[in-house]
Amino acid sequence: GRLNLQSVTEQSNLDDFLATAELAGTEFAAEKLNIQFVDPQKHTGLKPEDLERIKQLHKEHETLLRIPRRPHWDESTTAEQLDHMEKEAFLQWRRGLSSLQEIEGIIMTPYEKNLEFWRQLWRVIERSDIIVQVVDARNPLLYQCIDLEEYVKEVDSRKVNVLLINKADFLSDSQREMWKEHFDKAGTRVAFWSALEETERYEKAEREEREAENILEPEFEEDYDEEEEEEEDEEMDDPNNIKNENQQQEETGVESEVLSAETASPAINEVNDIDKLETALSHSSTRAEASGGLNNNVKVFNAEELLDYFKSIHQGEKVTEGQTTVGMVGYPNVGKSSTINAILKTKKVPVSSTPGRTKHFQTLYVESDLMLCDCPGLVFPSFVSTKAELIVNGILPIDQMRDHWPPVNLVCSYIPRSTFEALYGINLPPPSEGEDPNRLPTAEELLTTYGSMRGYMAVNGTPDCPRTARYILKDFVNGRLLYCHPPLDVDPEEFHDCGLVPKDLMEKQSALLKKKPKEATPSQSKLDKDFFKKLNVGMHSKGSVNIRQTGGVSMGGGSVSGSMTSVAGKPWKKHNNKGKREKLRRVYKDGE
Image (cartoon, rainbow, N blue to C red):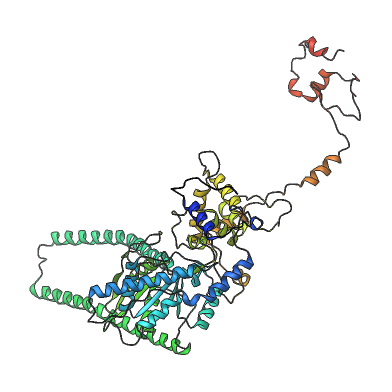
């Protein structure tokens, strides 16, 4: 009740806040009973009831999750006016998302906040006839932006949206069929594709061609050299071997006929290629009519089939007359540039495993009437349960990760214990007594065991968990640790039962099966049982063999000397010289 007469000229933010609250008559009560301590190393994620609550919030506010629109402009709009309108619209869009993030329980992806990247997307959409969203086959719904498809139709209803599911080699035929049925119900046009598989197929074909040429060229050169030497010898031997003009004319005529045939052959090949293309287009149009226009197929396309597919799905008026423009958009690190490189068969676009390698959109001609447009990777705003999902799905760079425990915990919740042990050749510690024997491993168990096995140690001698976490997360992003998310209307167990086993894991498992199985180590109870079954439990004394209680010598009996038992029990102590006298201290050491 005493007056506070202390002079206050400066206050910290907290003191200022509390002083203002005291002046306003506001009281604060600390709720200490609702505190829950969570070990970040053993925390495996959200509880099922929390996940359901978050999913319900996502459904309620999904209409507010939009991408920025480019303001309407015409020929009379100046560059300064357009720049001002774009900045104003972008600012309003960011304010709307900020108010959405203030809702309790909603976590959004760290979306792209640079206006220049969105301007690249706007220009790609405006100049393209077909907008291809490249998504990862392991979680297509995370990378699909529904609002982007709506914005494409707002710009021009004649434009076509396609969802290109890259890395489709991670999915089995049954899993691709489930995804096809899901997107058929949603009315989404889908194509399955693997840029890495197509690149490997092309490189393998090139390698085989080079090997075949290297085998044939030396034989041909040897035969050619022998024929040349024989002809030169004959010409030197025959002085009258002079060609007349008629023979020279005939030879030049034959050569001209051969040249004309060679120049005509490319035209014939072009005609054949056009016939094949028309046949493929007719087949594709027939399939499109039969399937209601979506033309979805579970087959993984190669480069030629994918190009034919792009040409067949847009038959209307083009943005550029006589030319079909295909725009590649999507998240970073989903394979947009790799797809273009696989189609062009040469490395035209720089590729990197770090998200955000492409900085500016690029246009590349595949054919005279088909152009590809590569857009920089954009992180679209979307809902996630935890921020660890962004790192696990490769949206954010792993090397820039600050907290490694949540992403590794998420990986441990996806991958079973046996997969870690088979792939890395480690033995994870089993669950302790009282725990579920089938529980998933924790991040601490995995990182400590794997780091110790590989020798990743910190300065203080403990396993370097951050370094180990980067290796494991990169294996998960690259598909070495494979986990594919199922469609919303499919049972996860049914989806994963028909999944594929990664190539590395399959090789490790086959190698383990070929090894001879070791004999099982007896349990502790069996060891105790066998020990107490022994009838003759012996004892040892210095300088003598095992003296049994059932015969021979008892303690202090003295019927068997130490030297005799030593010789009997230790044959290497018995020398071969029978005439040599035994040392008296050995004979009388037991006091006999």
